[in-house]
Amino acid sequence: MNDVLRIFCAQPVEIGGELTPPSDKSITIRALILGALADGSTVVRNPLNALDTRSALLAMQLLGAGVYEREHDWTIIGGELHSPSGALDLGNSGTALRLLTGALAARSGVEVVLTGDTSLHSRPLGRIVDPLREMGADIEYLENEGRAPVRVRGKRLKGFRYELPVPSAQVKSALLLAGLGAEGTVEIIERTASRDHTERMLPAFSVSLEIDEGDGRRVLKVRGGEKPKCAEVVVPGDISAAFIWIVLGLLLSGEGLSIRDVGLNPTRLGALRVLDSAGARIVVQQEGAHGLEPFGIIAVHPSRLRRFRVDSGEIPSLIDEIPLLALAATQAEGESVIEGAAELKVKESDRLRTTAETLVAFGAQVELIDDVMRVSGPQRLHPAAVECAGDHRIAMLALACAMLAGGQSEIKGFSSADISYPGLVADADRLLTGAELAQGG
Image (cartoon, rainbow, N blue to C red; front, side):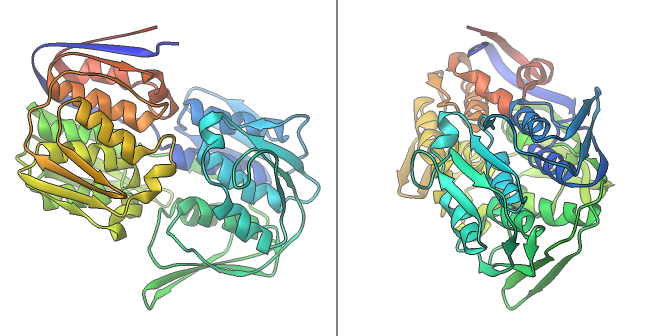
């Protein structure tokens, strides 16, 4: 594997040009799962072809869905799923693990073991299994309580009413998918809105979804027994993958960037709102919608940033962008604070800790106490040799740090970026001047 990235910057790095980011991972995986559950042929246009999505794609095949791949679209023929002959290995994909746990728990007659890599086995699953068991689900932990691998024996579930204790798009989505195979109505209550890709996608698959908002809460209701029907899903660019270029476009000199065909779902724009409050020169132009998902252009220009604060209520809308927001804070005037991001401790790595460690390795002053991170700025970074801890977001953070630091840096475990951004090095070579990147073993 190309697991080490070596970077040499002989002069200050500049950035400029235009790019289309890789397709959205979250939307691609949801489309694959709903396509496998639906009757007929679902076409997923512009899917992300990366490690996590291929794990989900293979799982759908092993469950009995027909899968036909072309260069720019995948066709999923679903409806008649069956128990696979072996375990479904979901690799590193927490989204696939959690959503499939919900979807298959309500699939009568299907028995399956869901597993993955060491990192996936370390992530909590109880927040999904516990409410599913309240619905009557038959789910067994095979090794460690609250962790994968799990055995799911599908059965008819019962409707229920559940208030999310913490905002989580994956928990919400798993319960909504389970609700399709329940008797009665499944009602999900959230006090803080999380990503709403599932809610946007269900109507496209002819599933009736009722949404009530008011009194500081959002209530989602799905009626059991509704059979999804095939659909066409067009996947926009992933704003989380694009965020490395948004931050570098602000912090490096050059002509700036134009990021095209990027998803502009309002539940994913929290980081842009934070940067705007810090003085970032970012222009967002919505061009249209792929189905119910808005997309458009983000123009980024070099900017002088001032300190900012991220509170716990904002975390669901920018959870994946926190590492790069922390990097932006190293170049902002004053002390920036990010708090309430405990959810990052159970990602591919303890992402709060690995973010702080990566920034410190490049010379930043970072204080991390529990789930509160304080970053002073502006600071001059220096070259470093770091490891990614198997975390694609940390790989992107380390690459961005190296561009700001200049000189010679080395990133071990960089192949983890392939989980969501397999073309990252190629895009870096095209957009950056003054830097040489060499990837090898």
